[in-house]
Length: 617
Image 1 (tube, rainbow, N blue to C red):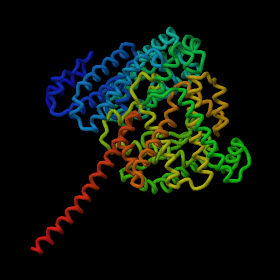
Image 2 (image 1 turned 45 degrees about the vertical axis):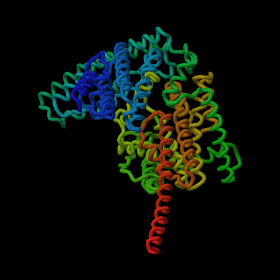
Image 3 (image 1 turned 90 degrees about the vertical axis):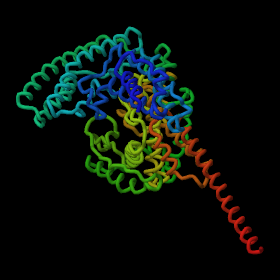
Image 4 (image 1 turned 90 degrees about the horizontal axis):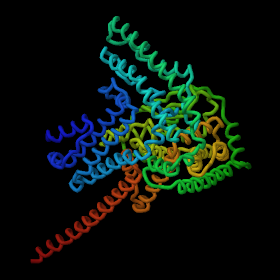
């Protein structure tokens, strides 16, 4: 590849402010596809450099001595970086790109533009990092992902520990700015600090020193040095976290916004629509989503009643939920984990070749979690099940949950993508820091969560829901996501308060009051995020219906699923283009096949006439 282009990209990454890439420099590379690839790699490098903890999480340890900056200057700098990179993308000759790469370039533009557009909202959620959800400051999941073998590794780690108090001071300045601008969070969206929670947090940071150091290459003298210095840094961190806790309790908390919803903020409704645009990847109003939610709740409720009639049950929805709970056997945590393992390996996995192409998908681990939190979730090839209260794991929903989180849901989706040539910045998305939406890099929530909910629906096609109770369990999960559309928009756009939201969820779902409380707090803290599940699934089912109508008997769900999955994470409006392109290719190939068949028949006939004419002569 041309050295001048590589040098230009290197300057682009390592200097600030960044120089624009000139047309001459762009044209020096042999192909536009190569230029685009270089820009995609540049973006991923920038992401790792700007968010060093993320770099550690994805296995790149070149920034292990650094931490993300929360200063105002860094916020402005990142926008400048992305503006310059967007200019370089716009300088590409799009006509010279292949069709798939042209779409990749458009997605890259969309990615950068999302962040740049979000800068308008830099004085809102981005000023309040201290939420209890997906927060690196109080959930340092990067710590166990680090390298801890040599003294150099520990020097880097100690540099990070030394920088954390400064990081916390920058966060405090941002939150003071939110107080001054009256763009604070609602009180329930704040992380809670206590002496015990600070002790637990420092214990997480102590992991490499306490649990790993004896298994390293360090000498005894080096181990002693690391332990002494880390103790010094940890005490500084303790004081910094205590100062932050004092600020939150005495300055920020008294200034939190009075309404649960964003509508209570200046320009709050516009801000909420920007959050919806971020999570869904296409423009839609809160009013439209609310209407869809009400329609879906009514539709699913009708299907639930059909199942109840099938079981000759005479009663309302809440009494049927009570009936289902009464059927649950007493089970231990091991019973629950073994049931999930059996569902995945014996029921789900054997059916997947019916609707998917053959791809290499590693086995998923099933692991119990004994602490308050989500009922189930997925990460790093592991399906986590909350077994703290085994009675809350209901057998009729287990199949739908397994399909959502494992195969063909999140586990299948992420590993399918790993087999495809997708730019690294889209394969390895930074999923935390959702407090700053819409001012942050895209996570394509509607694509990933829409697919996982669609995966639950695929269980019907595969005949996996073997009895009415399991079919009702799937409807229960779908109802939960439909209610989110009503409640999320209700809270942030239409003045629904906390108690009204709880009562609405209780009316249609079988979730414990404690769990509903947690869910509502999540919708308040992450505006619009919960709408992505059902809206994403509806979009995928609509695209499938379109393909079925166009192709008729020629429709093969394996091809459809390949197109959706192989495309990788993206805004849903781009998924429309991918399916349209596939249908065009299919029709073109069909036309060519027909023409070839006609030519073949005509050719045979012409040959026959020629032979007859020859012998007649």
